[in-house]
Image 1 (tube, one colour):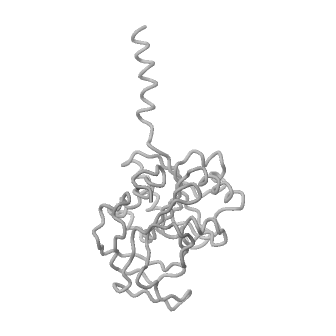
Image 2: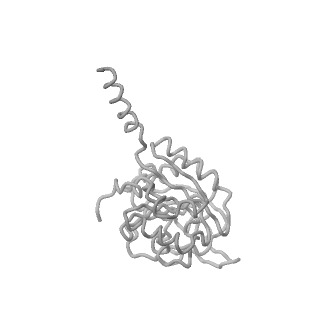
Length: 252
């Protein structure tokens, strides 16, 4: 009997020990440009989940997960390289309720090129994409080294990226993490959507508390090989960790 009791206790103990620390939904639907880096991004997320003990569920099917029952399973939702109008009105409403209940949002690269016609999402994302020049190497500057995942960046970093030029901020609550020095590359765009860059302050990554939840965004991640970069991966995990748990940042 004693052995049976011990075995029963062990059976109850093992699942609790093995449980992941949180669950993350990775959403990759595109209704516009489809980045070739999507699969590299998903693979990086799955590997980060193994490294940091969180569960990852990946889908491009909005109808499958953007409802109250399914979203409640996740502590953070990653819009991984999404583009265009990816959610219908009911799905948008479910995602708003999810954030208001304390959920986390993580936007990667073209998540800022998503849902322009949804004002609430624009505020959640923080800035919306306007245009970009060709991929170039530039100098990336750390604005806040105290946020989770920022500790591996040097104060200035040589980084190769498709440097997004953004529209003005949609939220007044943004805390900026990374900027790019426009003097270190050529920001002008003459085709498609013309642009001249953003001047002396060109944001690349930021976070905010928004409507009861948490939002983190990074414009990095255009190139597939970027997802193999250990510094970038740690930056991405820091945003996921904060969005999912709220830990690692002092109240401001």
